Image 1 (cartoon, rainbow, N blue to C red):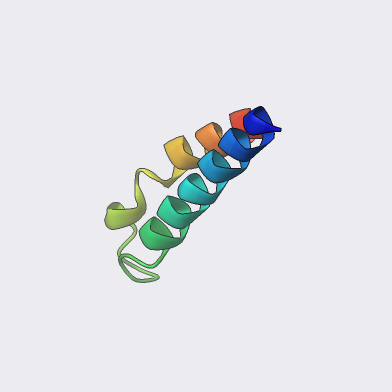
Image 2 (image 1 turned 45 degrees about the vertical axis):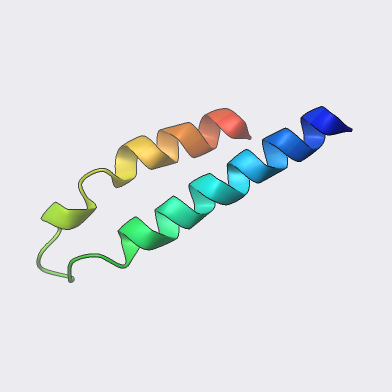
Length: 47
């Protein structure tokens, strides 16, 4: 049960970072979202 809570909380933190990074920049200015690919890799490892 403790492992499940740890994994779930890790996923929630990563999802928060993904939301925060995805709100940066604009449609034409994608440089602020350059780190998004690494966050998605971390998210895929958690799943």
